[in-house]
Every structure is written in structure tokens, then in C-alpha cells.
Image (tube, rainbow, N blue to C red):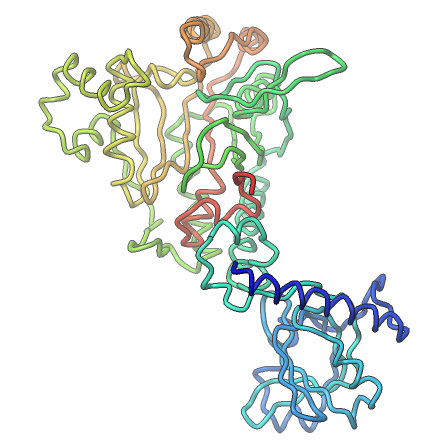
Length: 496
């Protein structure tokens, strides 16, 4: 912002504070406790905008509508202005002879951004615009700073995320994204509640991080003098509940991973995790299709959803593609490269020098992330990844080097991850011990052994299917937004 513009804004701030003081001196309740109303702006527009002008003139329906002033057009002893509730705009018309000289003069102390309640009959102007003829305009809140004049023209997109309240005021479509996100969560709850699942809450602070391979955030509990970790996933606690006899559980949870920021990652994110006893990962595929296809139809009006330059089809069934076959099909590498295991490992280590030394399975994972993931647009269950990158899944029935697991990819993003859960406590302990050794060698995504979870498995975990679905990424697809910051109200940002 130039010094000239900054000075002008400061002048406006002073003027607005002066107007607030003058309103208070005139006896106006400048910080009222409540405000009655008959309609929101959207409700008034929905109810009356479609009715003929003659019908409104004959009936003169009355309304009390609250909203924020977004435009003012003064015409001598009359003024047109628009108010908004963030979803719709409604014109209001105040005349000196109708509202009275004192009220009309007081309206001159109102600014763009102020919140008011307008009361009076509804009519349509000659241009057909629904309008409230104001008998009263009640002051509800003063906007002490000028609103952005050209919000869409701002070059610093982070300012929209930093001052999300301004983003919501100036861009009604942003509010619709977050209403859609709320509808996604509500749909999930209805879906699982109707199928007999129990919604639960599990701890967000863990003595041992677990449930996924990721770097945790660390904190300290003073009273107990112990380190704790913000959860990277609720998985191990949810499976303890299945051991205890809660055969169908789900949690909509906040999880935290101490990782970088990009279009698909925020260190704090929202996941759905659900587990059902006596099921496997094939059952999870069927349930996932039912959930997501039904959600697309209910919330977006059909099975096809636009996303960027693509149209994503949630029409069932989704494609099933083995992990190794996906690498061969989409990586651009010749198929015989995958038969040369030492050569493939060396190639992958060149792509990810920070992850050396690599095994064949981890090399495949590097190649998948680098070359394959973003090429899969339509919903695809990528099944049977390498066993060694799936420490909580059963070994595949078809190949001992693979896991009973799938990742659901949509629009180049991992949206879901599911297992036939590992139920053998001896095997699980051995895998945890391998992770503990890897941690000693400097692998910060591996974790200490969770002996309590192993003990829980020793009491008997029935065959179980489990899955996690990223709500942020799912909302990105349904809302046609290319950055995760567009679907998180307050994404993490660097300090100013």
C-alpha cells in the first residue's frame, strides 16, 4: 500500500470513529444487545423477489431485515443502498419524508460496512429490483475501517486467508464453500448414524505418536511432567474400541502433522476415520463408493463434479488398480525397469536423496508419489501397495510383498486410505520394533513401540476394515477449489 493510500485509509478510520461518537451522542445504542428481525436477506429475496410487482404493491408485505451495507447511492432527500447477509443482496430505499428528517440526517452517519436493520414494506422498482421502503433504519454495528474497493484485484492471496472475515464479506461465493463443507460433515454423520455406527471422541494428545507414518508436533504437560504429541491419526484408539466390543465406530477428528505447506497439505487438518468389525478392505471400497457417490448427488446435484479442467465422475463402480500396475501404467518408465530391483532402488534414491537407503517397496512409493499420483483423475482405488509402507495392514492374500490396503485417488490427490486391519499382536509388535529401530537411525516418521496397543490386540481384535477420508481434500473436489487453503477457514500462515 502506498503512503498516500495508507494516509487516506487512516483519515477514513478517524472519520468513522467520529461518526460513531456522534451517533452515541445522539442517543443511539451503538453497541446494542440484540436485534429483532423477520427475514434474513436471503430469506426475503427467496420469498419475494419472484413475485410480480403488482402483487407486491397490492399486498405491501412488511419485513424487518438485518444486513451489512455494501453500497450507498444518495439522491438528494432520498438514498438507495444495498444490504447483504453474505448470501444475497437486498436493496433498501430511505426517503426523508417517509423516515423523518431526524432519521434521514442520522443515516448520513452510516458508512459502507455498517450493519443495520431495515424495516418497512417491500416493493419493486421500475427496473424490477426488490426493495424495502424504509420506515426505520436501526444501527447495529459500525465498521471502523473502509472495506476493500477491489477485493478481487488484490495480488496478495494470503491476505484473503489472513483476514477471512473480509474475504467472506466481499466474496459471497467463499461463504458458500464453507456451507458446502458443513454439509459434507452433516452428510457423513447421517450416513454412518443410519448404518448403526457410533460416533466417538478419542484423545488429541498422545503419549506415543502412532496411527500413521508422519512427524508429530510435541508439547509438554506441566502437572504430570511428561511430553505429549498432538495426534497424527486416531487409528490406534479407535481400534482399541473395536477390541472392546464397539463393532462400528467413527470419528470426525482434527489431526496434526509437522510437515510442509502446499496446495494439498496443512499441518492441521480434518479427517473422517471409521472402523467396522468382521469386514475387510473390499467392504471398505463398497462403503466408500456408497458414501461419496451419494454425497455428490445430494450436495452437487449429480454424479459428475467439475474440478479444474476436468469433470470427475463418481459413478459406481470406481476403477480398481494394483499399485505396481499403476506405477507401470503411469510413471513413464519402461516396464522392464521394475524387474531390475537394484536399478529401480538406485533410480528412486536419486529422486529422494533424503530418504536413502531405500528398499524396493519404498522405492516404488517414491516413484508413485513423483510420477503417478497426479495423473489419476477419476476415482480409482489403488490397491495392494508394498507391505513395508503399510505397517498397520494385513499382508495381502495374493502376494506376501503387498498389503491388504487401498488408497482412493481423485483428481490427483489421495482422498482415502483403508486397510484390512492387522490383528496379529505378534506381527504388530515386530513391525513396531522395526519402526523403533528406524527411529534410532534418524527416521523421524517412525515411532516408539506402543505396548498398550499391542496388549489391546492380545485381547483379540476381530477381523476389521478401517478407513480414513480427508475431509479437506474431499471438499476441495466438491467445491472445485485447487488449494486446501480455500476450504480451511483459517489455514496456517507464516507470521506477518
